[in-house]
Length: 115
Image 1 (spheres, helix red, strand yellow):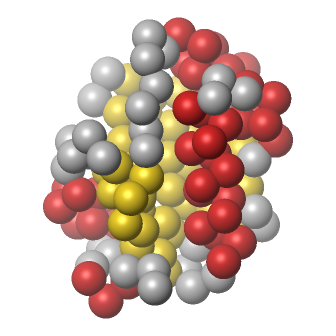
Image 2 (image 1 turned 60 degrees about the vertical axis):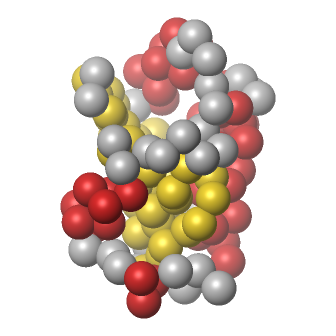
């Protein structure tokens, strides 16, 4: 586990929640892939459009799981987001309906809880 992976995911959440699109882009790779049950996108332009279109943003991270550049953030609303972080940039983020499905998709488990 590296602190920078968790810090990158926290910065991404903060930027999204504050609608700070410039920072969101700065902490995301140019070819970022993202998605949820409503669809998916790729690249900075699509990320900016998606983040701008959100009616409300309340992606508040709680417990985090991390291994080898993969971070799962459990969120207060019961959902979870799975991130891939490379060189302090989010290269992918996919939102899951619950923690169990995010952990299954990433093959992370309780042994990967960030201390």
